[in-house]
Length: 430
Ligand code: SAH
Image (cartoon, rainbow, N blue to C red; front, side, top):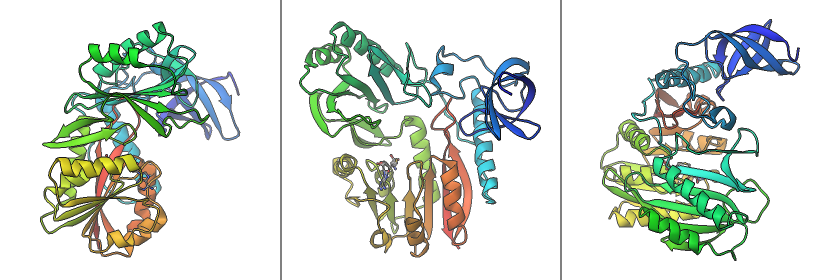
């Protein structure tokens, strides 16, 4: 089978963007192939019930195939949809949601994906591993570093800063103790934070800090973070401020937000606002509503909703994020929002009590069953579920569907050129 060349038609797409073909019942995954394309495919490896191939010769290309702008996209793998027309990416994302729900026997309607007006240079958080004088991204499913000159989905300013930082660090021979560079760029205010993740706190990075902050006035914070553990977790526990504050500030809809190095913040600023407006619309709260915001991060959704609600309580497991949320409420004179450091896997009944609406925005692994059961056994009328993973969303909805009516799924494209799908859905108690 290996090295064999087969003429195949792409009949489906995998969740990580590979084309799926079938050869006499055998499933063949083909990197870079688009739905409905026909190609001669060279098999590069085969297992008992599946094989992997690459396009050897395109016979019928998709009308939505475009030339990738990025010279390293194929190697890097960060942008699995780089060679697909943007509007068609949205069609594929909607299709992925529909198929996932079908596989779970869920009868739900998926709206058209809310598109990103400017799908390039959108990412406000860049993470760059550094090793043996190389600065880049990890190749997909690997620890190899793929170097780049320009990344077309990170912000332009982050690209510029990174290029200059790299030059300076190399010329001062300061890259040996450096493990990662993290850049956060708040698009509402323009403020930038740089995190230098190092394995030695004794190395002096102040010359680099002076150089980069005199060149880029938007930089408001440079933080040294110590990580000398041999794991794939990027950030360590100890931090030192090298320049400015230990936070940056972003702003949207007249609310300001402090963001620290360790706090989660949505990576696509403009789409984040559209997402939160969908949450607001679906939650349909008024000045009587008592809202619980689980997985609240730095309190963005909580504070956005607090302006209309009677009260909002946020629960979040990362301490710096909770501290940011508390400060954010104060900074904006929002008095009806409070934040609790807590793990949503622990019993949440005492927080669910007396609430009308619950917002959940969990990480990719979704909700755990005990939380779902607590919600089912509560008096909560409305649940707004924000999900970044269709598979766990579908799994969780199957548990909730006997208690709640499932509204339309509204996808918002937070991650253009990648296969990632974000969506929001309203559940109403039956
Ligand atoms: N709603 C926020 C954050 C969403 S990301 C926003 O829109 O910005 C998910 C958040 O859940 C992260 O802040 C993460 O730190 C937090 N989190 C992850 N696991 C958690 C858990 N078990 N309990 C509570 N919070 C958790």
